[in-house]
Image (cartoon, rainbow, N blue to C red):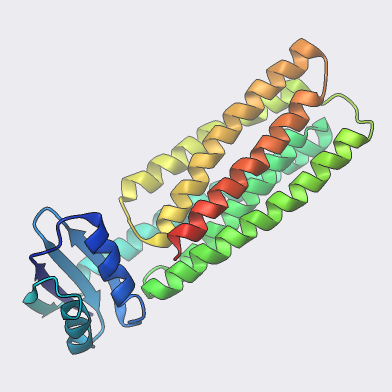
Length: 263
């Protein structure tokens, strides 16, 4: 692994950063890009191909030059190890709560809990495949983020079909106590996951995708708690179906953001 630092005099805003990312996207030997717009420097971790990287950046006419290049291992390995640790923790938390919520969702007849459980499963899937690409190329990480986005959209469509079926059919009143209690524990779990992901401070596509999913989960958990309270106050299952619908709207919105991120 090599670490090369570029001075890019005309890189003074995110638009230049995006331009550089797009230019370097096809170079599979690049492992990570660290931008420092304030100091107008770019640090690239890569396996060989320095001449190609240097030429690609020079083609953008941003007044670039190599400041230093050296063989490098420790820092990149340390970050990859940290990413793996965080992803394993959030993967296990999300998969555990998928099992908890799907069981209690079915038992309590709560569409809100069932919807949230499917969202937890999608997140566990995202974290699982993210573990596979830690340390991989930028292109592979973007492809994983794209796959995760399409997976979320698929789950959302399935969810809307089930919500529609329940609106049309006659369903028993969901157990509001179970809805609220399970969602409170899920909210705590997702808050821990979000804290760990934000603490990692990673800007890579697959990690940013994970943060978007977990942010959605926190919102969803609060919504299910509110729906449980409304089921009690109104003596109606409609709030549970409404929150189920909202959950899948949020899922689709998150998926669209992920697909934009993976471009």
